[in-house]
Image 1 (cartoon, rainbow, N blue to C red):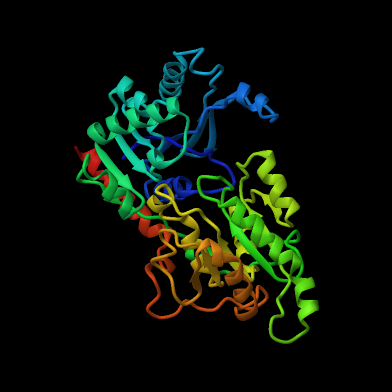
Image 2: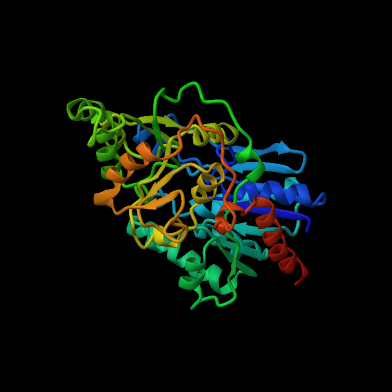
Length: 394
């Protein structure tokens, strides 16, 4: 393997996701590998409409000795500028040429980037991390996703899925899909960290992940946060005996993709919305939580996922309360409690009163642990490298 262009759905930043873990591992394992990591295009007009600060992309930028990032710009809506995607594709080709990449392998996460493979003829790996056809998107965007995915499933040199369910769903169009699941940096997550300064004192119920309505059940989080905030009054009225509840803070850690109205509802209910934290810092938040939460919607979209937080939550060995979503449902038992939405808040209260506290030392994973408790990223890197090497040999 020599040159790799990753067309990602996320930026290369301090919040590490699947791509960053895999790419960093591949760079460590292969001293001849060079990577151009293409981030989602900036959209200045859309940012202005949302009241956000517009950004204007950047050319190839070194992140490490053999790793560069590139962020194109989409200047106008596609309905006004039908050539927007072609211009973005040409900017990627020019950046690759400046880096001396003449025949790279494409690693495509975003099916809307299929045009780059069509334009260049470069061999492509399609890495399926979500079933975007099961998400709620505008009709025009859904057409682009559908057309791109159909092309990639038919013509990509290899296809990888992060979950068996994704491989099953797409298997009718592509029977040879390899499954490379998510993982965790086990050693880092098992190493004790200090309590973050902005984590509230007292018991904490914590959610780690991007706040997005595709996954997060905002109404459920609002109900749970409100109940936890009012628990002190309930406990006072009930006395110290049966019926008393532990007052706690509900904390949300991760990039916030919710609109202002949803964010305000969460804060009004008493939730602490901390925003994104660097990958090394999030470990401390998880270790010092009393209960870890998965208040996700149960939908065709979430059923396709292999949640990264499953591995991260399991690594720190804290009690977990989750709605019956894929991944957590299969790992239920021990520290993981599954609760339907109507039972979720009460299950969080029970976990707070019966589980380990965030001040307790990290227990060792039990013998016979679920595979998600021992799935290190190094294993996933080896699996992905085998797929990539197979493509390069063709």
